[in-house]
Image 1 (cartoon, rainbow, N blue to C red):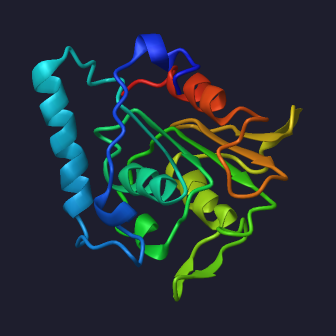
Image 2 (cartoon, rainbow, N blue to C red):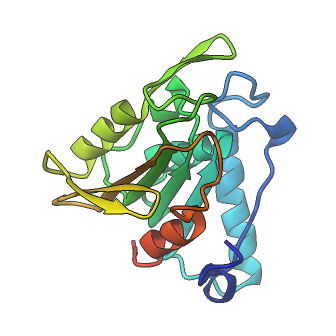
Length: 198
């Protein structure tokens, strides 16, 4: 994100989960709700020190961090103005008990991802949902029409949904489990998030 407008226009926070396992993952050492409370506490602490625009708080993450991004999108749409998940690990709990409120969401995922497969599967002995299943829940939540418009972009495809409530996009590429350079995950995420407001 240091090569995007976020470097100059945003306060960037990079929290670390306990033992590199955010809530929802089978290897997480926290109970349900503890990381949500932790994230909210971080926001409160930063807002006490800095001039934070509460209408422009965003979540972004990769892999297990992408799963945590989906968790906050699921449960905290009143706190976050938008979310972007890159190669997210969507273990079943990350999409359970969600608010009905819409939230702008960008999902980027490689169709060649062999670690967290696009179509879903099992890892660490438990099930994780595929990108299409996660997208379906946000299509309903954000009031989006089907099918999306699909545009070719360098290194992949952008699926743009026409939504009555909040924006929804999916960017696919043939890559594996990585923070994409083409298309540029950082730039795509900032372009999407920076236009969102609560």
